[in-house]
Image 1 (cartoon, rainbow, N blue to C red):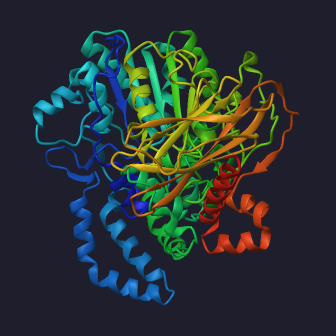
Image 2: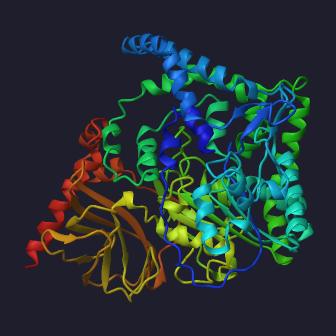
Image 3: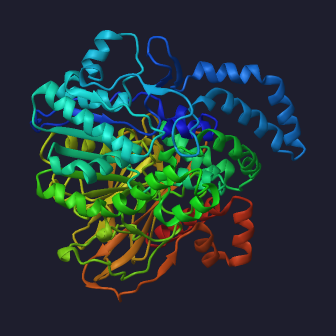
Length: 636
C-alpha cells in the first residue's frame, strides 16, 4: 500500500514511512509461544521480475529511489516547462510529464482487460526455505529484495529470532482469490519445513485483506494459531475508489500530518495548508489519473480493493462486460461470495482455536478525498465493520449502540465509532489518530501488536487492562497525551480526581498554558508556564464534580507552547462520561468541526471568514487560552 501511494503522491509517503524506529526489546515479559510467524506485508511490497528466470529476468517492481531520481533528472526540462505552465494555471503539462514517466517506469506491470498479465511477471521466491528471514540474511547480508516490513520483523525477531520468521511473496496485482491461494501454499510449506502444526500470521494493510480471504477460504484447515491484522483492508480501501472513480480531491492537511506522524516530526507544518490554497494539486492529479489507469486499471487487486458500496458503480464505468468477463467474474466472486462471509468465517475459525485480532486507526479523512473516518488510507468501516459517524461529527449524547453485545458498551470515547457491528466486536482495537502503517511509531500499539503475535495473553479486548479496546494515539507528533486518573483511557467516572498530562515529544519540552473542559462543570488548575520535559507527566487536580449522567461527551483541550516551528498549540480529545443514568437515547449526530465550534462562539459570518483564511483553529486556541485564564483568575 505504501509504495503505490508513493507513486500517487510523488513518493512523499514512502519517505514518511521508511524512518527506522529503534524500539527497545524486553518490554514483553510473557512467555512466547513457539509457532513460526509469517509476515504478510502491505500492498506492492513483493519485488517482481519479468522473464523466465530470476537470475536473467529484469526487475520490474521494487521502488528504487535512485531510479526515480534518474527519471526526474531525465525529464528535468519537461518538468521545468510544466512548472512554468502551472504558474499560468495549466496543470496538464506537469501531469503529462509525470504520467509519461510513471508509464515508462512501471508500464510492464500492466494487465490485459481480462486481468491476466501482459508480460511474464513473477515473484523472486515462494518456498519456505527461501523466504525464511535467517536464510535470507545469510545469503544476502548487505541487503535483499525478499524481506519486507523489516522494522516490524526486527521487533518480532527480538522475541522469537529471525529463524522463525517467513515473508509471504505474491503478485500483488492479482486478486484476493489468487493471493489467498498463494498464502495457503506457503502456510503448508512452512508447516512441512518446520514440523509445526500451526503458524502465527502478522498482516499489514493489503496483507490483512489477503489473510481474511485466506481464513474465509482455507481457515477450516486450522493451521493458524494467532492471526493479527493491523490496519487491514478487509472491506477495501479508499485509495482504490478515489482514483478509479476519478474523484481524487487531495486533503493536503491530512497528507502533511501523515508525513509528520510517519517521520515522528512535531505537528508543525499542517497549519500551512489550513486555508486550502493547494487546490491546483487536484488538477494535476485529475490529468494524471489516465496515466495511472494505463498501468493498474485491470489489476484484480485494485478491483477487490473497491469497498462493496462503490463496486458496481465503478465497474459499470470502467470494465467492458465482454473484454473483462474473466476479471469481473473473479472480482464478483470475491465481492459477493467471499467478502460478505468474513465475519461468519472468522467466528468459525475462532471456534476451531484460531485467535483473530484486528487493530485499526481512526479519526482521519482519506488523503485522496473520501470523507469517511479512516486511518487516511483505509476506512474504519472497511478495516473493522464498525459503524461510524460522518467525518467531523459524532453520535449525539445518549446514543444507543446497534447491537447489544451481551451488555458490553461498544461506543468509542470520541462517540464516533459503534464497535457493536464489527466483524469481531470483542477482538478489535481502535486507536484514534493512528495513521495507516504507523503502529510501530505509537508506543501503545507497538507493544500490543507484538504481544498479540508471539504470546497467548491477548485473547480479546478485555484480556489485559493495559490495552483497552479504544485508545488515543501516543505518536510523538501529537506532543501531549492525557487521561483522567482512576479511569479507563477515554472515559470518565466519579473516581476521577485529576487529569494526567504527559509530554510525549521525543526532544522538546513543553509548557502548559491552560486546560479547557467542555461538557461538564469542572476545571483543573495549571501552574503558570508549568514545564514538562520529554516523557514527563503531571497530574492536575480537578475542581468541581462531574454530573451523575452517562453517555455524554466531554471535550478536553490541553493548551501548551513548545520551542518548534509552531510555538503555540493544543490537542483536543473527546471523553465519554460514564457516571450514572444514561442520557436520553438519540440516533443523531453532533457537528464537531472547528467551524461549528467557532460559529457558536462568534457567529457564522465571522467564523466562515476565519475558516476561509485558515485561522479557525488558531482563533479557537486563543479563545480557549483566554477563557481558561479568565476563569482561573476569577477563582483565586
